Length: 197
Image (cartoon, rainbow, N blue to C red):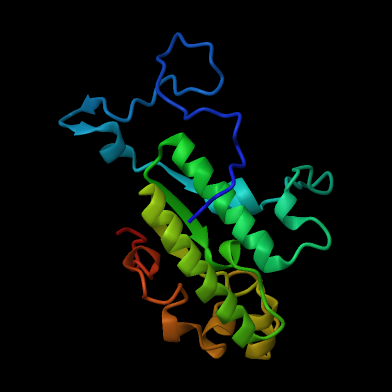
């Protein structure tokens, strides 16, 4: 897999100690430091949240989003945007040196015009994620399904719901896959109620 760099001017982020004045370094997190018999990596299981880092537009109660997200510009094909976003995300995960990421299904794949197309988009992007995971060694800490905000899922359920109402998921056939990407890859499957691997 050939990936165009997105953060080409950023070196990998490393531990530099509490006295570092480098804004792109870890001052307190030393992945290899042993504390109470385990490394900090084992204790903390640090992860990057895909939605917060690559999907959220930077909006708040005061106005529209302020983040420059090239993968959501007008006129770009949604699947090409999703691929570009994913390549940038895995480059970011790799540069941070963190072992895990988290995501919601709608974060990695755009909604289609129909439920079938939405599922197909997710299948394609799960395969993309698996290739990036193989390439970088980054693993999935947890993945969830966004059942109530996805228009195709809401339309299929025949029901307008509010946050926390999971009836659209059940009516739209999501339990068939557990609400998560297809089980082709263990790291990208439903990981149980605890959300842990």
